[in-house]
Image (cartoon, rainbow, N blue to C red; front, side, top):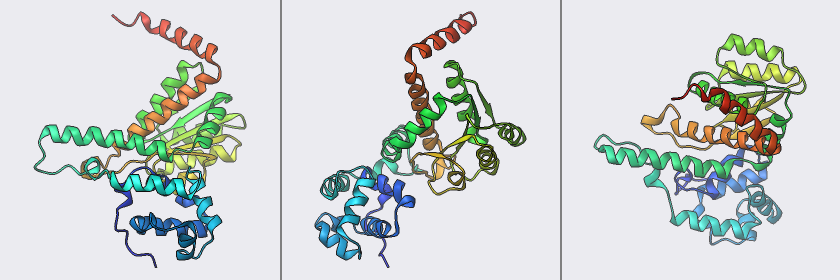
Length: 291
């Protein structure tokens, strides 16, 4: 049984974030290697690939395959990045708000936590999944966007952006409305569900119904093993550490908004000229409403 980690992986960026983000999709042997790395990061930098394979009862090819799955050329490159991450921990960035903190300290912690959420998310966000999402959205006949509670404003933001590109989109935050709209989707349509926990029953059920009707389903969530990921064809994962005053997942919402921005720009880039034309038309339509 693996001992408790001597270095908290959540307080170390880069390689650890990638490893945690990919963990649920790893094979059993690869997970054994990942477990060892997370529990003994300071030992790993002194081990050869053969020694690591022996310590985890796996093979050298398993170790190399794991490193490649999380974005590195091989074991050696992974060790170099890991060594860098170990000497540049982000404990201060992730520090919780303390009762004695003054406002400048609070400001610094909040801004740094949000910035770190973006740095961590870019590590775990899979480029292949992102490309699939952009392609599905760019070719969709209709896009229904679902989000409840704190995710509802994000769904509205996505709707606002996609509308400017001339896309047929709608944002819904009511469970009954989501149920009805998802029942009407079919092949060629896209259902985009946004849920920090990935456990919102209304959003998950709507995505599941849309999927059953042939629509492509996309989930933006913080938890890669949550219920919503089981019904999503495409999963876009964020990374953010929450503290006592951040239980509302504010850092994660910053990351989710950035993913939505990336989807918006990505879709617009697939037909640059048309997108610019649509944006200009929507800008002209609202120009008279500004002083």
